[in-house]
Amino acid sequence: MPDKVLVYSRFPKAQLVRFGERYEILNAAGQRPDQALAASEIADIRAMIASGGAPLGGDVMDTLPKLGAIVCYGTGYDGIDLAAAAQRGIVVGNSPGANAASVADIAVTLMLAAVRRLPVADSYVRNGDWAGRKPSPMMRPQAGMRGRKVGVYGMGEIGRKIAARVAAFETEIGYFSRTRYDLPYQYLPSLEALADWCSILMIAVRAGADNVHAVDAEILRRLGSNGFVVNISRGSVIDQPALVAALTDGTIAGAGLDVFASEPHAPDALTALPNVVLSPHLGGHTLESHVAMQDCVLANLDAFFAGKPLPYEVRGA
Image 1 (cartoon, helix red, strand yellow):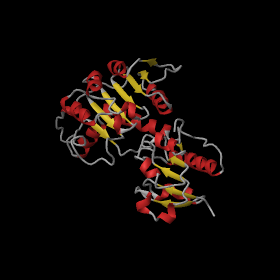
Image 2 (cartoon, rainbow, N blue to C red):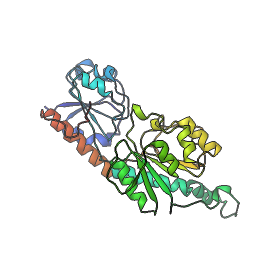
Image 3 (cartoon, rainbow, N blue to C red):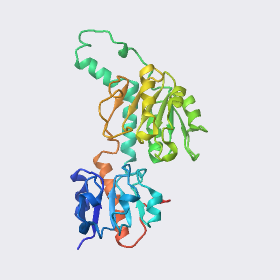
Image 4 (cartoon, helix red, strand yellow):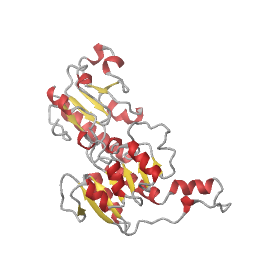
């Protein structure tokens, strides 16, 4: 019989097909395992697939007495209580870099859409204001990309791909990261220094407890009235109320967001603003990225059930 694997987070069924071809899948669909499934069904579960951004603490782990592996579908693992996993002898794996190219693409898309005000321009055409030659302050000429200073916060694989793409727009690239790398970009010693230096701040840092609300009202003030912020990391990295205030009062010029403090994000003060471009956390949502992430998940599961180290283990778990 195939080994059992619990799917803890809610995923579209199409994303689980490959896993079901190799393992017996029990789907909790985002509920606690002990509430979604019978005790007899989960008693011998040894491995779990989860969305790395969804909270998963020791209380959930304790519902699965034989759990030995948590495999994250995607790069992130910020929702997993790594200390609790380590205490219980549970290894944690992820899909590092599997969606980096797709996420970098959406970051650049959001940047261009925000800087060039494409949603406003689209509406200007659709509602007839262009045909009617109706004046619009939002359609006044804006600074383009050439010569802009783009700051990348977090220079992991996604950050590097963003930098490489943005450099093609005749920009200057700077970055701040916990590690200084041998790269052809200017290194800034702090996030504050990066915000002072750049006019577009690209957030590509791995989310964690140490950078919750790292981009706060002060960082936005340093970015300035001609500045833009783009976030494809996690919503927790930005102080969202501070961002709404900065977009409303002109502290910054605009924003492009693929992630939010709470997801899915309901219409509110943020969504009502014309100077912010929004997408529903679809950075890694391409066919190629899903195949690559599933490859990593299967490699981790296959290794675990074979008694081997996870090829994509999250160190420190």
